[in-house]
Image (cartoon, rainbow, N blue to C red; front, side):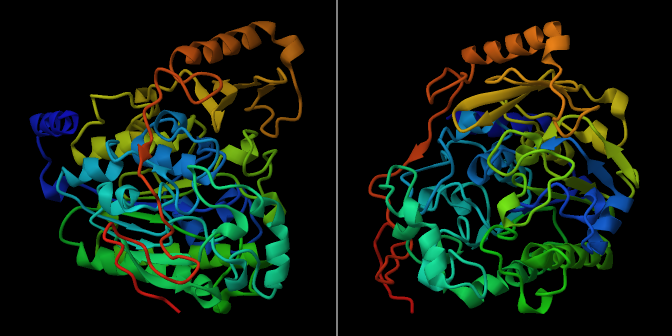
Length: 489
């Protein structure tokens, strides 16, 4: 009933003519560091991203979440992750929980405005049928439903190319002892890695499949754009790259000064370039907003570079949660522009909705902002957020307002515009700022809480009974409610 009322409200605003509705392409890279691309200072060759930045906008203070699943929940729903996916970390294979099907995703909002929708890549919001993209507003889905390290060590999921699979298995020995809980199977209890077409397993991903996945995602994306060129479309392209294990296509291996992670970044650059080239060829560049971003900061232990930020993936230091982001729309976004305004993955839903002639859901709390004024260079028309809250799992660890960021546990205060690397704690000199930021944090107790999974503003997880791996350890597929079985080699 609530969902129906929301859709009726969209009808009240009316549809834009299809010719006026822009297309949206949201490219979400996995674990790419702040300085892993040319526009943000890398010495690695990323000419297509360099051109994208020169022709578009750099969002230099754009926030994700510290790890994969929460970040993607924010991107899809326009909400703080704790509001819609209250889990301590990420989701694993055969999780009994996932993004609640009652949540309204950006795909559902756009689909009601006449958009064709596709998700190609890593989903990571639940692998059971009820949680997959095709149950969340996407017309089609193709991809590995979670991280590429969540498979079997013997099939390459725990080690880089050329490394012993036994070494990869040993690295996960501690996880192997962790019992399964509602968020799924860990370590060496994880089943074979599945590739899905919509909600069905079509392949068991081994080493060769890992190497080819970026190429296959890219080809699917190009096919979708060609097939959808005469109607408004939304393409969500969440890459498996550059998450460990690092599997660039063999044609890109050894090309980068930054090892395997740099090789894979070059392949992502080529992938993005082919998409932008096709948009130009089809004369869709003037009516398509393309976003390039990452789901969290880079993993320093796997070769990422987050400079000049401090910290790594998994933390609420800037290096764990601030991500290098580009927006491209020739003729609409001023070329070579940049903004340091505080923006977030939560902002894509209200932004895309506004541009498509819809509105963000009015029957529930939405935390994101409409970034249209920033994108179009109308900075004076943009109403900035008073505060951004840095959640890690259930815990609120930091709060930012304007240039000031306060780490709540240790009381450290940083002026990010003067000290982006969080090197000089100025709390002792700025008592009033500390007091104001603490009061902002305390106000969250009435909404999402500072700790724990229970608070008034937290919405329920989706749940299923007796969740099963999509491929069993015996190779049998268990991907639908009827338990239809076949064995993949």
